[in-house]
Amino acid sequence: MKKITLFLLTIVAFNTYAQKLPNVQQTSLRAPANVKIDGKAAEWGNFAAYNYATSLHYTMANDDKNLYLAIHATDPNVLAKITQRGIVLVIDPSGKKDDKNAVTVQYPVFEVQYKNKPNLKFSNAGGLMAVQREAIRSNPDSMLAVANNRLKLNDKYIRTAGMVDVDTLLSVYNDKDIVARQGFEKWESYNYEMSIPLKYLKLPSSAKQAFSYHIVLNGIDLLKDSGMTMTMIDGRMTMKVDGNSALYKKDDFPALTTTTDFWGEYTLAK
View 1 (cartoon, one colour):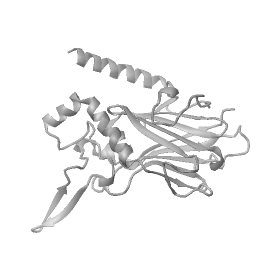
View 2 (cartoon, rainbow, N blue to C red):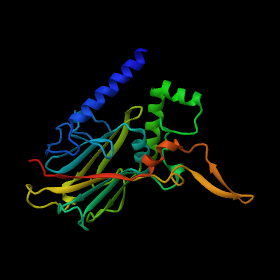
View 3 (cartoon, helix red, strand yellow):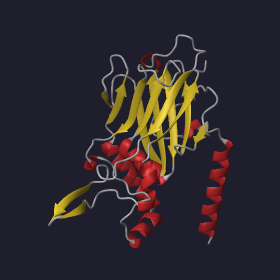
């Protein structure tokens, strides 16, 4: 009973905190002096905004050399999309939201085949027996270790577009000083951090001029991203499922397959 009460109080506190935040960040912020891109969010404190379209807490900030984006997510459907399709950040220096010269950065980027993705089974997983669900709920520390290990094994790439002299597919250990890291601090509590040198963003020479940014969570393909295949057997269509794939509950399909996004404006903080 105590555990249920504590859980309910935590949900109420989280919802109250989220409701106090703007849907889109309203202020320019200097990055923390102790900022470190390591997939941990301690130095960011309270996030600057909570966006309801994407269910993301986030903060955008800058220093004299870099633009930073920190994100926190806990919704199982959102976590499934991030660990399958990553997060896309688009920077439009014109502020018009339609500039063909915009800069795009996608992270994390996993290989196309589902076998080369983390394939984590969150609380929205389908096809699990009651015993398996209870094992997941009762062993959060074990699940945390598994999740971070799978992310680490598959965390290899950053995809870019629109940057001069920067390859479209970069190693996370690149020589362009584009740094991105992710990780779970608790089971189903995910952090994302990225820093991008300002010199790549084609920003206006006037620091007072705002630029637009677009954050996108692409919907997943339930067949391609989950390792399911459809084959004809004796004239009947049959679905084959790999035992290691991440399956989801039918009720969550709309949230999983729908691309969600939002736009904002940011002016560099002096």
